[in-house]
Image (cartoon, rainbow, N blue to C red; front, top):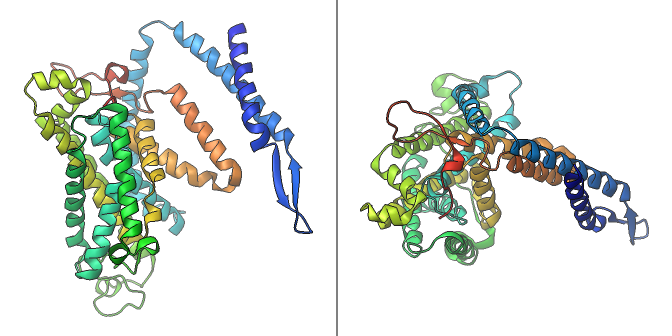
Length: 425
């Protein structure tokens, strides 16, 4: 208990040093145009008290966890597996029926589209980071390539969304291969630095190549998708979606169509990933994640294995980028900054590296939760960051910390994520 109190007191002292100026003092405009310094030391005391209490409870929880018998993690893994057996179908059913549920309006559907976009991006990055163990901090570059590929092809060549979608994925996969070649011999932190630089290079090119990309002004007037050739028109003209199906023209038709479109793309990403995990290529990814030297000794071609992981992950990022461009009808380099790569990587890590269900839950928690806390204004980031820290302390291996072995002799049992080396590069 004394050690826990000492640890909590140190944490509160550090919090006081951080918050005394950031939170305790705030400048506000005065009536005469001057700045007024307002003191908020009561808020600082409240935050320090919360930090002290949280650190104390965490220290006591750690001590209790260390005293638990060795079989407890196995029971926790079994409980997580049982929850996942019904949670995944429940999430899928909710996603399929969301537009038709009572109380769901335009704002809820827009939020659902945003969440599903990040779910798809998380599943694409999970191939590179979770399965292949290659730390990628520049994943937003492939997102940007897919978006700009669709925008340019649709505007300059008049191609439809359904033709541009696979082309955007192919172009993103091509850039994924180009990134893979220079980093074949890099691992860990060095790999992360190079991929981060690659993402920044793409963003700088988009900003400065004004003749092609529009520079900082971006590209506007991007064509909207159609329902297999039937445009969504508010006027109800002949040949439009509403006229062909005998419906009253409504702006919700396009929103519902976009929702189901990104849902199908996300499910396609999930299906392909799960199928590949059971193929020799997927097993080679996981073998390379565990030990590259042993993987090479077994005769596995590491060059092809790494390039395939980068290419497939980039392809799904390109698909998501094409959808983002057609949904927004406007793109600019400001939409593809490093913070987007950080958010996607945080979703993968928070959900559990290599876990498809965990990535989906983490995207719902991070993106959906961030919107729910929007009314808290300046406290939103603090609350959201505290929740993330608490989750990573309580579940350091992610929300879903169990794995089902790809190949098993006899009964297929879930194993703890502590037995695998994920994201080590």
